[in-house]
Each structure stands twice: as structure tokens, then as C-alpha cells.
Amino acid sequence: MLALTVFTACKKSNTVATQDLPEVRVAATLSAYSKTLTGSSNGWKAFLYPYGGGVYLFSMKFGTNNRVTMLSDINATTSSTPAESSYLIRQQQAPSLLFDTYNYIHLLADPDPSVNGGLAGEGAYSDFEFYIDNVKGDTVNLIGNRLGSKMMLVKAASASDFTTFTTGTNDFIGKFSQLRTYFKRVTIGGVDCEVKLDIANKILTFSYLDASGNLAKVSGQFFVDGTNSSLVFVKPFTIGTVLVSSIKSFAIDATNHVFSCTINGTGYSIREAITPLKLDLTAAQRWYNQMAINSNGTWTSTTAFHYGVDDYCGFKNITGYSSLWYAGPVVFGGTSEGLIAFVNSALSSPYALSKVPFTVNAGIARFTLLTNAGTFTAATNQAIAMTSARNLLYGGAVVGNFQDWYLIQTDAGGINYDMVRATDAQVWISWKPRS
View 1 (cartoon, rainbow, N blue to C red):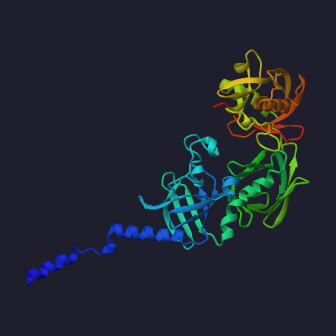
View 2: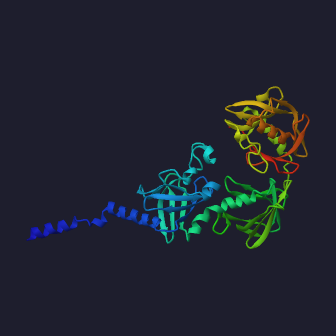
View 3: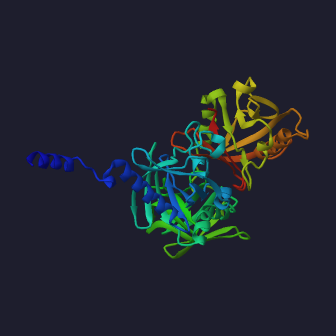
């Protein structure tokens, strides 16, 4: 009897309930997460914060067939055209949501810079596989398995909520971009500011003069919630007496070229300006001196001139086009310098040479046409683009024509510059050293 009792006691201590088995608990957890994602009939609004910075919006609807439909504010197409791909809920080191076939979320991690402008080999340093950190009410918080990017899913309240959420960013950019000048002005909290929009990184920068008369600035990364047309700064900042956390009710007066908006319920107007708030008097000469230090003694620009639109001259219509160069003696020999296109891994005509020496007057650079080389009149995309670029840089096609330009340093290291036409600030080009 004693032996039987001991045996029975041992048997009970070695019995594990089925629901307590690790694999069963994991399966139950994954099933619960799957039901959460598929249970939102209107889908989810997603806020993705890549490891590389910024914030991107997505609308996602998860089906029970392991298919997901999404929209994104990455660009105008992704914001309004749904794309479908597959997804998985899998146990890795933790329960994870995996976007296992290509969709809009992969654009941010695409290693090819031509796809979405990210860094070669890395993209925007973003994830597309996430572990589920927690679920709180109508919110799911996730963290990237590889880089630690953060994503928050919030239940969409309606079908309209789902479709309009991602449209706000491109609506804002489209309206703001109708201001034709490089320089834009607004007065906030008693402070005159110059406003600059960095479209690629979704950053608004406000520059102003501090108490000592020096140029200071504050910048904020933002997203635009299309459901209420509200631009929200990731980190609020203060200008004068005003705490700026969001911009609302934005609109464009296309006739008078004025962008209107509200901050904290107060109306503001952002207007075109043709001069910088404070001209950097030595920037033009620094730009010229830096050219000799750059690789091949040259400046390059992939988008070339902006005049109402990016790539106004049409360089991207050229098969094999890489960049537009402003180069010096290393390329042209002697003391020559000028404008030439880099196409199919080579420099080719037509090109235009500048009068030397380079001249700067009161901080403004002057480019004077010295020589035309090659056939500018040919009916080829390259000749057409170069003709347009030459006419913008020099103010015409005739030897002796000239144009004046502001040079604006755009990085702390002094190796990136924007060049802005001084007469009207409606034409500009971004220069960087050849990599």
C-alpha cells in the first residue's frame, strides 16, 4: 500500500498540463496577436520611426489569409495606391510580425539609393520585421528585430480614417511647394523667420537672428495626419513666445503665392522672399575654394536645377545620366572651369566654360559665359538639358552673358551648398562633392 502511494505521488508530480507546455503557450500567444491584428475591421494606422530617423505613416489592413494591404506617406503614389503582400506572425526570440514579401515598408530599407534615396547598402536604416512589445487597448507597440526601429499601430476608426491617414504629408508638400522662391518668410512670436522645407527627411527649419544678430535656427521632423490635416512635430520647439507643436489649417493662395496656416489657433502667412534673412558674405568664396579640394576638383548635382519643379532642365531624360558637374582645371585643363554632364560613366559635350577668375561682389557670385563647346542645338535629350542649364547658370547663351548667385552652406562641415539665383530666388541647385 505504501509503495503504491509513493508511486502515485511521483506520477502526479511529473504530469504537465497540456496548456502549460511551452509550445502550446507560444501558439496561443501568436493566435491572440493574429486575432488582434485581423480583428480591426477598418485596419490600422501605423507610425514607423526608423532607426535612421524620421517618422513615416502607414495604413495597414491584415487579412486572415496572411495578406496585408497598405498605404504609406512615402510618396504621392504610395499614399493613395494600395499595395498587397504577405505577412507572418512567428515566434522568433519573441512573438514577431514579419512583412516577408516586398511592400511599401520595404522601400525604407531598400539598399539601392535610386529606389527611395537612402544610403547605398542600408536605405533609411529601417526594419520590416518587428517583435511585439505590448498591446494596450487599441494600440500595438512593436520594435524592429534588426535595428530597433519603433512602430506603433492604432486602430483606424473608419474606412475613411484608413484611406486619408497617409495623404496629409503629400498634400502639405504639394501646397507648400507652390511657393516659388527658395527663401520663405514668416513672423512667429514677434520673430522674423526664414522657413525651409527638407522634403526628403520631412524637416521644417526656421532660421532667425538672435540677440547678437547672428543666424540661429530650430528644426523639427514632422508627420502630417491626413485624417485631420494636422502637421505634427515629433519634438515641439519654441520660437519667440510661441511653443510650436503642430501646424493646422494649411492652405495655399496660388494667385498671390501665400501659404496660410494656424499655430495654436493663431493664423500665420508664409510668403515668398528673394533675399536671405542674413547673407553669408564669405560663402561664395568658400564654395569656390572647396571645389579645388573636392574629388576631381568638381561639384556635382544629381537633380540639377530647380525652377518650379525639380530637374527643370530634364537631365533625367538622358539615358545613363548620373550627375551635372561644375568642374575646374582637373577636368578641363589649364585654368578652365565650367558646366558639363556625366553620362554613361563619362564626361561628354556639349559643355560651357566660365570666364575666370571667379568673381564675388558683396558675397554674391557671378558666373559669366566664356565659351560654348559642342553642339547645343542638337535634338538630343543631353543637348536640350545642357542648353537649359547653360542658360540658367549664365543668364543666356551668348558669350559674355552672366548671372549672379547666392551660395548657401547647408551642412556644418561646409561641403554642401545650395546656389540660388539672386535676381528672383526662383532657381536653385544643390551642390555636393563628387563621392
